[in-house]
Image (tube, rainbow, N blue to C red; front, side):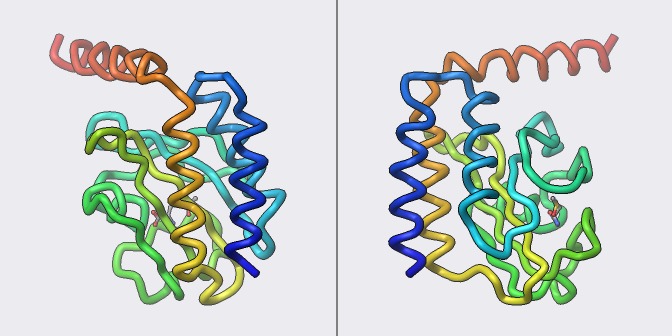
Length: 171
Ligand code: SME
C-alpha cells in the first residue's frame, strides 16, 4: 500500500536527516532515499529556484537538464502555480521539457517556505500513469520534512549568490 510505504519513507527520512540543517546535503539524501524506496521511478531530484530559472540540484538518475525557466514544463508549472502537478502522460502535457526520453509520467511538488518558492521536487517514471494522489500526499510530506530540517539559515547562501549574479549582470 502506497500510504504505508510513504509512512516508512517519512520515518526513514526523519532519521536520515537527524539534526543536520544543510539544505543541499539533506536534499541529496532525500533524493537518494526516494530513488531507492519507490518502485518504477527513473529520476528523483530537486530543482532550486534561482531568479527566473529552476536550476538542477541534488538528484538520482540519469544526468538532467540544468536550467528550466519558471512557468515552463511540469516543474515550472508547479513552481509558479505553487501546487503539485501530476502528469499521467508527459506527451500530453503542453510544454513538457524532455530530459530523459524514457520518461512517460511525472510528478512535481513545489517546495514552499512561508509562501516563498525554494524549489521543486520532481520524479519521473518510464511507466504511464505512475503517480497518483497517494504519491502527491506522500511526496508533499517528504517535502515538508526536508523544509523543516533546515533553518532558513541554509538559504541566504542561495539568495546571496542570486544577488551576486544580478549585480554581475547589471555591471
Ligand atoms: N520534465 C521536466 C524537466 C525535468 S526532468 O524531467 C528531470 C519538466 O517538464 O519540467
